[in-house]
Length: 509
Image (cartoon, helix red, strand yellow):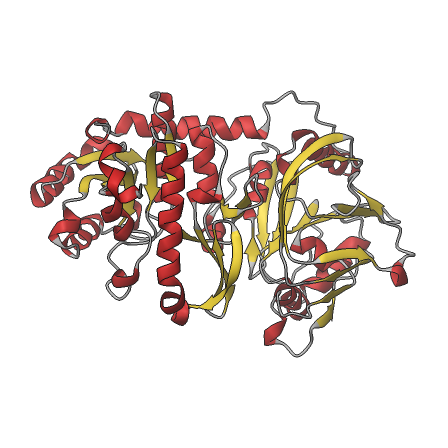
């Protein structure tokens, strides 16, 4: 039987819409997922279409947005690409990679996307919903919208907001960010642009990121309710716990507030940076300050440098070269500097990058084969097919420990025999997952294909201690909770704060 015929039998979905991008939809869904889990329900997150280069790989090798993976963790379940059936990964120049149900199926320009992909996109959304309900008939979907639901030039071809809400007859919550200002206009303007059928779906309003005494907004709350005839079901205070941002613009807004750091890390802000949630475990270390490196400079103030993942490795390597950062990184390595590259960052640390099929940003340039930074004797060739898989391995350096993470990359990397004089060693027992070398004057240069490497507590702590030892700092022998446990604690804190200020009773019938 088709899902449409069974909609009256399912638990009423809750959908979180926003008055704009960045209003707090993702964290609201995360909080509601954990609240409902704690109440004994079976919540499952869903976002029909997401646009992000911050990705996760599920246990079947399918790509999905990290935000939906985080929401799945909040539900206490394994993430699945069915929770985010369409993922668009921006490549620059208004071009995006299109991923359906975890698998890359092509690229598109923004201009042609809805002409070519709207109908197959809607079919894959319905297929995912049907599959979720067939496997979990008692679940309650907690659905995240995207951007604003009333972008009038796009509303007729919006796959992931009102079309999903109307299809499932979901109870919708409208979230607005008071920190941005103009909260009344945001709410009233959004509701005025909905047609009567759509407006009936909005069952509650949340005021997000309120600073100060909540009672001071009581008059504002009454005005909104009188004007809209929709209850304000929550005024959520400003929360300090940081979560992975969905895009690199949000990433730049994250500030470290550590006054007396023992170690300072510099992360290169690549134009096509991806998978920046890799660094959340470092952000949660109490002795570490993270700064973002955006332009050429003397890097000696950093205790180690990270080259992150990239959606366009050739393009980003040319950025490093043209900006002078490539030279800065090489100079830093000569002065006992410690460097680690992850995925695209690993590839850029090598000697050559070759892109015969225009997969990694070379199409806009005359050369399909370029030089890397040249600090590791590695050659990378980008082929047509991408590798996505979960990883279970064992590290050799800087310690022996079990390693979990995932790969998500194009490109095959091998040792460059011409540069074999640069002594290089494997990091893992799986020899093609990462390499490192020790500089003659001190410091190490390392690279790995494993996303989530810093989530492995023993590995992260031993690497940090390696740096601390080189700086004559005492070795940390802490017995702290693991990062994954801490992430669960952060989700719990988020849910507890939402639960204090959010009235969901009318949504759980």
